[in-house]
Image (cartoon, rainbow, N blue to C red; front, side, top):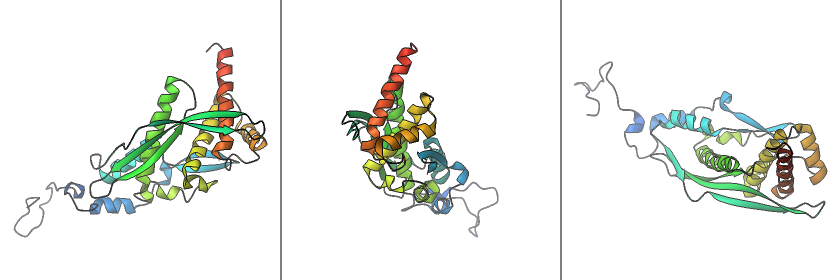
Length: 243
């Protein structure tokens, strides 16, 4: 007997029992299934601006890990790279000037494994906001964290799957790779403008003026030259300041 039950099969009070997720179920343990059925705590959800005053809901990487630990148990799941972290270049031509520019970003395929369930794999993506060692390090870590969080979403709303449906703004961003790239470029552009002290309203006006589209609707090819220009301006500012 697993837990040293008495003659009537009852577990004596105070006896330590084996957790459901330690029994090696063929399928998710009942305790895990119950946890996954619970709704996500709204207090855990973060939001990032998408432009025009709208926002996108998401779980930060450390929050996704904490929730996975609560659902599966700290030793009941894991994640690993399913391939190489790849530095990619997005090349675009500014329709107004014909000028070509490139923005670099990392992609990372990540697999999440949980005993009793098929492995879940998804692709993370994170743009390089600053061309420095620390900037590339941050983008690599961001791509891995994004891939892990995306893979966890497939386990249900408790781990963020319902956040896409509740997105305020360009919900189509998650439909394909271009959408992922566009969202990463929006985040990079917002961060670069913040570093330069540019008000968000001015940044959104500039995007509309240069692309003819709201920030939340602009494509990756439209945003890439704007991010490249913002990177160059930041470099010039820091060079002038002697940084």
